[in-house]
Amino acid sequence: MKKSFYDLNFSDLETVINQNNLNGSAAAVLFNWHYKKKENAQCNDNIAKSSLAFFEENFDFSLPEINTVYESKKDRSVKFLFKLKDNHKIETVLIPFHNKYSICLSSQVGCAMNCSFCFTGEQGLKRNLTTSEIVGQFLQAWRWLATNRPGEERILNIVFMGQGEPLHNFDAVKKACEIFLSQHGTSIGVQKITISTAGYIPGLKRWSQEIPGVNLALSLHSPFEEKRNELIPINKKYPLDEVLTYIDKIPLNKKQFITYEYILIKDFNDSSVDAKKLGTILADKRAYINLIPFNSFPGSRYEPPELDSIEQFKAVLDTFRIPTLIRSAKGDDVLAACGQLNSKNQSNYSE
Image 1 (cartoon, rainbow, N blue to C red):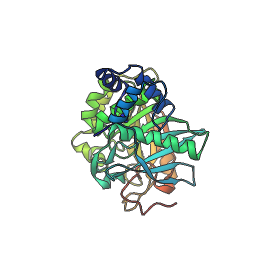
Image 2 (cartoon, rainbow, N blue to C red):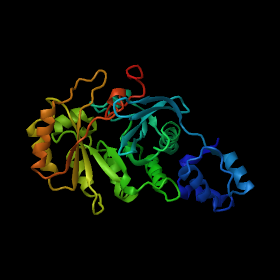
Image 3 (cartoon, rainbow, N blue to C red):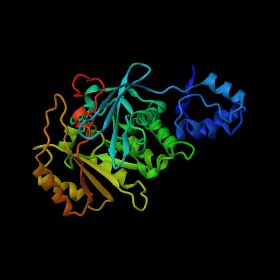
Image 4 (tube, rainbow, N blue to C red):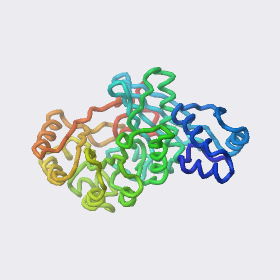
């Protein structure tokens, strides 16, 4: 069975080439062709015929298939439903900002974390994505932009905030980051990649040694154990205090912060008491807070807060001098906003 080319980082590809006595320059040529130029067809430039024959015989260059595209009429966000080779499906979102895009990548089919505020959690975990399926989301989204919004194919930020817990699929996510960061590959800047976690400590233990420099975002959502247990069930196994202890050990670059995501839910975690507790635990940290008003999804028992509550919550945090941003929903009219991704529920999308 052929191995996906997109499962290999640059070092892996060089090893394969050397083990098979092929010309070493082929690695740079292939990475440039498929990642920098983002070509889909077989590369025939500057590669010996013997090397070409080897690659054709041993490598699969196919990518996940775009099954459906949902375009937001509200803000031009784009949600892709990808169909994988085993017929599982995943979702990916392009978020426009200042004439460029951020891409929100999925790392798993479904998710094992079962967070109560997240539509993905209702799917359960089906399986991890391979590196090629993660990288493929980026490449296919770029190609869609090149075809459908020519001149706009500028995806400058990558966030692992789609379906799945990225640190639960650490090895594939790590290798995808290596490909994105490679000067031979897409050359995304290290500060332009953010990996979100619900607080999966086995992944956090590996972070400092294996993914240095990449940004980390913690789904915090409540500073109180009982509330966080309801929102994020793995908090019972990996309590917030322990999670923060591991995060505090992560070395940060000079201008780097840890992002703390906070979903605001009406009459649940949006009071001044919640805000003061949150400010207290983050006050001495290099923290940046994203306040995210809850995005409704079919069957949810939660409601978004009133605007006054959101602004009052931020005002309390401002007294702690913690940089805080209220994040507006993008793509919520096509269930593409934070917490709304669910590749099994296709009947509820508005088009």
